[in-house]
Image (cartoon, rainbow, N blue to C red; front, side):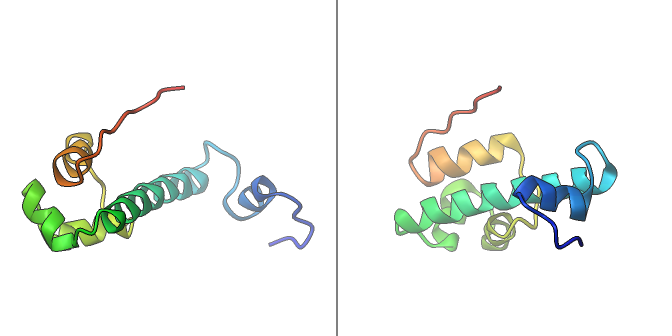
Length: 97
């Protein structure tokens, strides 16, 4: 990796390549899974709910909640809504830009 990196985008280009390349696309998918997992984890913790309680409320398993929170599992949109709305009592809105 080059030591002449000046921005985060420069770092991504240096390490993963341009958007649209196989390696960069794989990184982007993993980073989005990580962000969703962190959002779920943070909201769950603020709600004082354990992974097991969230799993029971949403008809999933604790191990699945753990994998999602750690960005290690894909999540269906219907499950994402169920986790936030049924499990955490939050509304979830999606914005398309």
